[in-house]
Image (cartoon, rainbow, N blue to C red):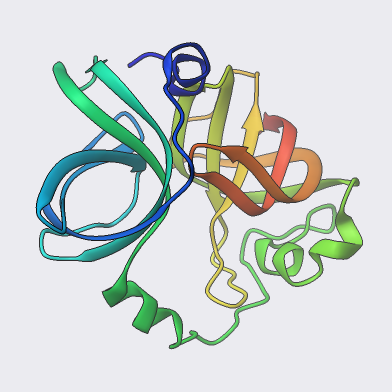
Length: 210
């Protein structure tokens, strides 16, 4: 699939960001994105978001980012006549679950004297903004060549306020899913890349080593 951010910049007809609520009729995951056919009032149409856990029958809320005509997804080998790229889609069923915060786990079996846990980073993110940190953790997911970056999700078994997955962006060849690595990079908070890429905490300019 083409780099969506670049395609949007070059080819979108942008609309004023409206807030929609719709029911999911179909859903497909591919290439790091979730494609959903939704019923919005009397209209049905396709939207695309960064990949997430969505099921048929869920109700989603989302804001408009932009429409594209004749968009071809290489990973799906499918062309959509019209598709809306959207942000902030959250099933109502998941909104209820958010209230049930799991107990915090501040420790990690992967932690070393030269690394910090993911939970500690989320808890004290303000103190680490702009600083270089190192996390020792397992690679949970990798999305390559999106907006000229590789996106590596790390988990170390720690958790703070339900947040247990930390994203590292890098131009370096990424490690493989399942590998345990040291990841070092610069802490950034409340980073909004647009098109659904918003992160309360993200590590940029990352490097990886075993």
